[in-house]
Length: 387
Length: 141
Image 1 (tube, one colour):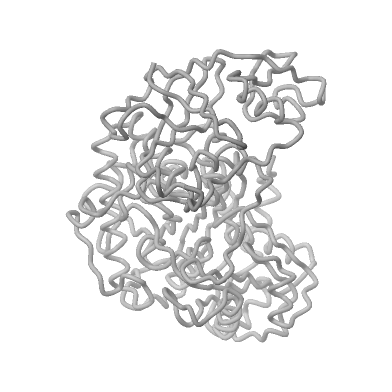
Image 2 (cartoon, rainbow over the protein chains, first blue to last red):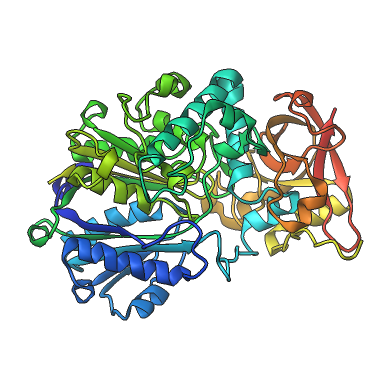
């Protein structure tokens, strides 16, 4: 089990010093996935005021670090291709923190690039995995169907109508944030409750507007030691707490469809950071689907089991509400290339450093970023603080 | 018909041959821990309830296939070209009376939410395909 006392000694010892997206997100058929990695890496390093030659540790998911390092022309001394779905990049933050503090490296680069929309060579599934043997033959493939089955179970346990209303609340509030982010896919496209309810079915109970986007995008994050973070050009953000884990791969093996692993990673990250829910100014919660947000709010302890529909009621998570959530517009309305988790870090770092433009929150000092990967399978949580 | 894209086929592994062979004979064989009596799905080289016993900790048991509906979705957008002709179709997790949950399809009813009630009784349907694996689906009891 994690040793929380040892982890507390790690709290704040590494800082995020740079974040960036690739130059254009959305439909970008003219760029390969690796080009998104590279563009984002350069942008994040420029944000930090660091050079690619400073990087001595590389982290990525979806791709092997072998491919990404080769493409970038770097020779890392610490390498981590942990790939457990879209949460991976949040998990990489904890790994970078540990590696830097242990002395394996000084400047860690986490990159992501995926062309979910335009890829000429999509990442193949492993045909030998149990998922391919036991679920795919029944047409249980891809995230929407699996998450929809989890959401249906939640509706059964906690009420269909109030869950439906809550899913709509999340879709609409998230779109309002996207309407304030010029990089968002739906920057110019508002969405009403009627739009939500009238959108087509993808996998009942999911409407189209319950589902994240499928885009082409990249992002990168630069992390270094607390000491070296003093050199950062645009300030830094301390990594105060972290937790990671998973409890299944196939949806049919999930121990409880209404409780994902954030029930462990959230409390761990917050205890390591020494913060409580009331201290947090921003929650960046991976919104692969509207349901993902509801179940995650409960798992992280912002509210109790079955209480998320009340928690998000009346556009509480929208701009101007008292619980700012997914202020970049989320995977639902900003961008989601397939493994979105890194974008929760990018936005949290921007808000904490005051770089979030029109959507900048007042007095944002502490943020939680949470990734969910696979089929509600893995989670990574970090608590970040303005340095 | 031969022009329709094929659905994904299971690549049977050594530890799951008995499961898939059983379905061809319209029999459902599951693994059980010899020590604790707890069933597991899917088949493995160990019992997750008694891992230290290794392969010897597992025994195969033929079960009835009586099940209840645990949850479901109704798919309107095909996740693979092979399923385009089936839309809309019902995916489900069903709970066998032995306590394991298995992924499947519900057949024999119109794919409308009001036709499905969580907890409803289900019976197995063995769907045979020439030259392919037999699939274990379920219909209302």
